Length: 389
Image 1 (tube, helix red, strand yellow):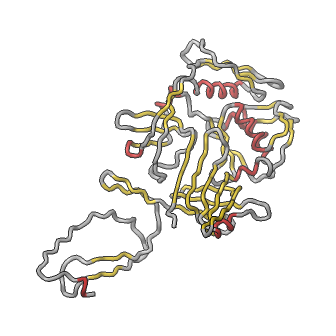
Image 2 (tube, one colour):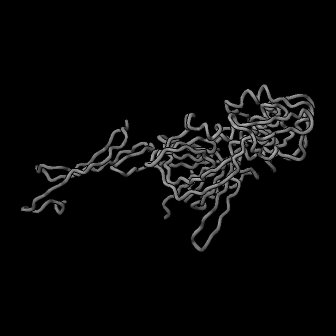
Image 3 (cartoon, one colour):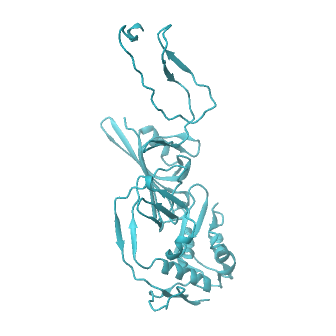
């Protein structure tokens, strides 16, 4: 070890580096000190501690370092499997989350193959944000000594669609509320419904379907519930983890009122990266007529307060508009989508607890250096790539 000592006559200057401190841990740290006997001065410390991997955000000057912790396991036995890369997506118009990924090796591929023709359930955790998917496709390819596989999965609620549940035809024989017909579709499936606070009273008490009003031909369970959500232009989406379907308005309110609402997420200028913007010019409608069709149909005229109501949107006709408040909700969504818009893509936003997961339907406030603005999240994509041997 004497080869490592400082030769006599050399002036030694060892600057003290500024190193961000890891979060405190309870387990002991074993340190090894390497120094020449009887010589004063700083020692070299090697830290062999087993720290718990907790995701956090560290600022060093103008640079933010994100400590990302990702785990992928099989739900049946918590056995880990390995991916080279993955991508998780959901759009405001689709009901389930989707995952695509590249499987690292044959062992992981074998773990994810269906059992008795049933897809495996997998758990993906990124910095404490969890998803559960059904692995609907796992395929492998081999090129000489190299092998790889592809993973495609969807939310557990995808089993409410064909072919897991066969299509059926149905017509309600007695008067039922919107929530009751949704509950009937989910009977014996192990899934339940959850409604946004602004829709709870409408769905559970006010919106009533007379006998024969709720009727369809050859539809799967999720498609039938989708008819109810589509009637008021609400988003129907699967819970990331639980066996729950959510119905929530697409818009938190009229865009002209967004300034008075509390945003779901605030993005500071430091976390905003945008490749560009695109303009979408839509007519500035201020009135729309929403009508039912058939049994129990009602007709609602929805007009923006403070306007003349002379810019009419195309009439909306839906057989499930059997209550004026349902027609009003559909009309508000129609008018909220009108007018000139700017579509903005924001990239490289870290998925950490300080910011949270930005999901479709959330109202986001972006604080840029030049201005502060608010927008509606319409799609989310999370990408992760790992070191490849």
